[in-house]
Structure formats: structure tokens, C-alpha cells
Image 1 (spheres, rainbow over the protein chains, first blue to last red):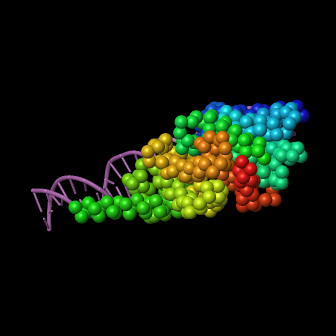
Image 2 (image 1 turned 90 degrees about the vertical axis):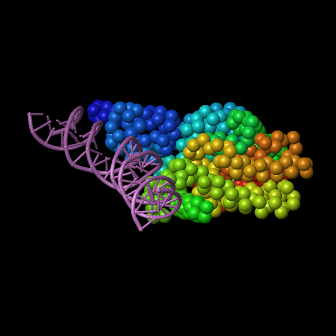
Image 3 (image 1 turned 45 degrees about the vertical axis):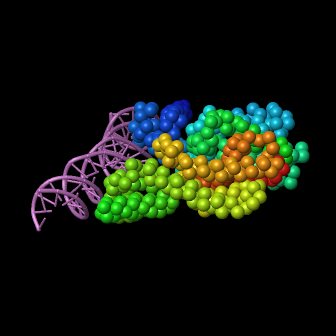
Length: 202
Length: 202
DNA sequence: TGTTTTATTGAACAGTGTTCAATAAGTTTG
DNA sequence: CAAACTTATTGAACACTGTTCAATAAAACA
């Protein structure tokens, strides 16, 4: 059955080729501004072919969505070596913000773009949930060391994620203009440091 | 010059008619899903006419954008009667979150949708800045009463806005699925209460 | 070889934002 | 009142969008 094997490999190669093209165009022009024809042109195939490998534009989005989370997770995992949970939590925030700054379009795809179809929990958001869990378990560890007393872990985690996301979303959607005389980097960094200051007193 | 006057009134009426139609369709179907033809149909005029009164879809967006901020501001202004600045600050957050919950599409337009063109600071974001200023001055008042010591007002304000926006943006874009067994309302309310708890200790 | 699967194309459909010549309506002049 | 001029309105057209699908080319199997 060597042929069937090779066939499957070729199919995977084509899938990869499409995703490579899609990623390039997506990250260059953003989600809405990217058309299926753009992607097809990028890899010199006809638009119709994309529908042989993917159900629709949403499914391509979906794949890149997961790719983004894998990338973020890999950067967060590095912090596992930080022993103190509170130090780790603080660093996670920095990594999160830097991820958004350096991967604006991935961030958009992951957290802001309208989710195309109802992504089944089975495949789609599993990886997102993994990132949340990482945050939540760190919060729990902090709590075991006496921090954030009497706080519900889930709500507290949601609040932390909200703050981080708020900082990044305002940045991604250019809603920082009202704060004059400050660069985006300054705003995000010092804004987050204000939040850390709050956490430290708790 | 009675005719010229009436003419101008008629022009304003038509402008209003278009905005009324646009608002209805926009808030029904969201920004991206609304087409110029949809709007034209809604008010029983041809698509081309819209371009006689507005430069493009972006300008209509722009007008509704300001409308949204006027609405939000009017709700925040009610809190001016609250004497204690910290109580007022806390209430502002609640109002902000409730505004997002009840005006999801306005919120989208105001804080999330890609700004079409570079809105000139002169007309476009002036009203947004007004809302920020209201928040900032409340923070400053708090500080004068001894709260949030040694915090930069602008960064601290940005941080608060980020938290609020994060809560609302996750809600608006359906990124709350990772927190199971909790309704959106519970998450948002109790998440915000966690944040208030942090503020109270500061 | 011929038959059957599989992969690929490109035209077509219904939709989008936008432009613009034609026309209708209203106002101002002769 | 009629002609000239402005202004408002139309609808067809352009170039684009995501998606489908019959036709076809290529490869695998018999």
C-alpha cells in the first residue's frame, strides 16, 4: 500500500501549501481583507481547489486560529521553569502582551475576529481552553501560597485575562489615540504594571 | 431665503432617514453583514443615493460611532450626582459593562470594529476622548482622597479601561466559552467585582 | 488497454462597495 | 407661462467577494 501512503502525503503537502499561502496573505492583509482568490493566487492554483481541501474560508481560519494558540502556548510554557507562581503569573502577562504586539494578526484571529461558524468544543477551542487552564492553575498556585484570598479562582482568572485582553485589544484596534503623548508600547507596559501593582497589594 | 432654508431642512431629513435605516440594519445584522443595498432597501431608495449624502460606508459608520458615544456618555453623566469619587468610579464600571451588554452592536462599532479611514482627531474621536476624560478625572479625584497612591493617572486610567474593555470584548466576541458553567452575565459581573476588590485594597 | 478515482480547473451565481451617465424634480430666470 | 439651470434620484455597470459545480486532466486500478 505504498501508493495510498504517498497519496496521503501529497494531500498533506497540498494542505500545507494552502495554509502557508493563507497564513502569508492573512497576516499581511488581515482576515476580512483576504479573499479566497488572494490565497489561490499566492500559491498559483485555482480558487476552486481550496474547497477540495477545506470546507470554507472559516475552516482555514480555524486552522490558523489553532496555530496561533500553539505558538502562544509554546511561549507561555517556557515560564514553567519559574518556580514562584506569582512571579510566573506576572511574567505570563508580559509574554501575553508581547505576543500580541509581535503577532497582531494572529492575536486578531485568536481573540477578536468573529468566529465564523459554531466551532465544536471538541476540536476548535480545546487549545484555547488549554491556555486558560494554564492561567487558572497558576492563579490557584498563588492562592495556595496565600495570595488572592477569598477570591473565586475562575472569576479571578477571567478578570486577569480580561485586563490582558483589554490592553491588547485596544492596541490591536487602534483605540489608544485618546491617550496622547504616549506610545502604544509605553501604554501597554505601564498599564500592565499598574495592574501588577494592584495584584501585589492583594 | 425661505426656500434655501427648507431645502436644507429636507436634506437633513433625508440624512436622518438614511441614518435611521442604517442604524436599524447595522444593529440588527452587525457591521460587516450590512450592505449599502440593505440600507437603501430599508428606506426604499436606491443604493446610489446614499453616496449623495455620505462619502462611503465608513462615513455612515462614523456617524453611528459618535451616536454610540453620546449614548454611553449620557448614561455615565447620570453618575455625576454620586458625591464620593470611588463610589462613582465603581458605578461607572457597572454602567459601562451594562451598556456593552445591552448595546452589543454599538459597543462593537465604538471599540472593536476596524476604523475605516484615519478618523481625524478633530471630529471623530473627540467624543471618545470626552469619555476617557470623564474616567481620568474621576481617578484623579480618587487620588486626591488618598486612593491609588503613587500611580500615574493616565496609565492607571488606561488600565481600568482595559479591564472593562477586556470583559466586554470577550463577551462581544464570544470568547467566554472556556469558562464553563457560568453565564456571560455572571462572568462579567463577578469578574468585575474581583477587580473592584483589588481596587479597594489599593 | 480501458475503467474508475482522484485532483484541478474555470465559468457561473448571487452577493458586495462604489461610480456615473441619464433622468426626474424643483427653482430661478427671461 | 416657458426656458434654463440646479439639485436630487435612479439603476445599470465595474470590479470585487465566497462558493458551487460540470467539465477535464491526471493518476491508479483492473
